[in-house]
Structures are given as structure tokens and as C-alpha cells.
Length: 179
Image (tube, rainbow, N blue to C red):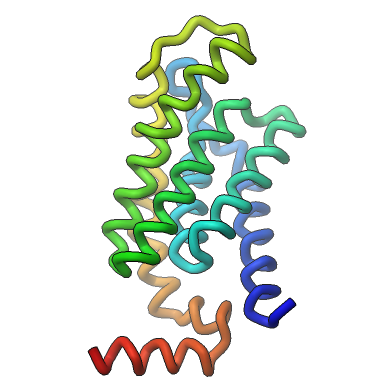
């Protein structure tokens, strides 16, 4: 395993741990438990690690929260879709607002709609297709606001250089400055 991959895996584990440790900071909205820290973690990991490590961190955090009894099955589609779309949009467009939009749309709309079959077939709850969209959007907004404050500060502090290594980050910066 390359040094960069090991650093990304370690950071993904730390992001997942942060989401789990902060899981008591939940806000009940309708029939769901909303975790703004999870959405912050989705954005931070999507920006610094990319879509796949971000999805992995979201999955691990959701799994551990469910095993501990502090989450619900609805955490899986919401957090994983938001993490993936956030990381993908940031990787392609390199602008933080697109990462925020990816988290909001991925979690609220895509993840919220994917909760419908989970709620009705697995959890035996009555649900409508768009029932979770608004609660997930509210939760995502809280986490996105937190991320809009903290992620730019982490970028400025050089977290990306720490994760991918100084020589790789410097060559990326030089390439970006040449454009």
C-alpha cells in the first residue's frame, strides 16, 4: 500500500471516528435522527480524501452508530450518497461550493428518496417517497454551515499537504498555478 493510500485510509478512519463520537449531537426531525456532524464529516472527507474514501468513512460511521444503537438504518443511504456526490463534485470542479451542493443534494434528495424502500420494506414503517427529503435537508444544512466555516480553515492550514504528502501537493499547486 502506498504511503498516500495509508494516509487517506487513516484520515477516513479518523473522520468516521469523529462522526461516531459526535453522534450524541443528534437533532430529531420528524421520523429521523439528524446528525449535522456527519454532514460536516462527509464534506471534509469528500474534499480532502475524494469520493470513495468519503463513502467508506460514511459507511463505517453509520455501521458503528447502528451497532451502538445511536443511529438508524436511514443513515446509510443519506450519508453515503451525500459523501459520494460531495467528493465527486469537488474532485471534478475543485470549488468548495460544489462540494456543499453535492452534500445537500446527495443526502437530502437522493438519500432521502432511497430511504423510502428501506423504511417501508425493512423497517416496516409507513412512509412517502419524499418524506425524508426535508428532514435530511435540514440536517445537511447544519453540517454544511459547519463545513463552510471549518473546511476552508483546514485547507488554509495545509491538511491536504499532510494527507497526500508535501512533494505531491507542491506539484499539484504548481500545476494549478501554471493554468
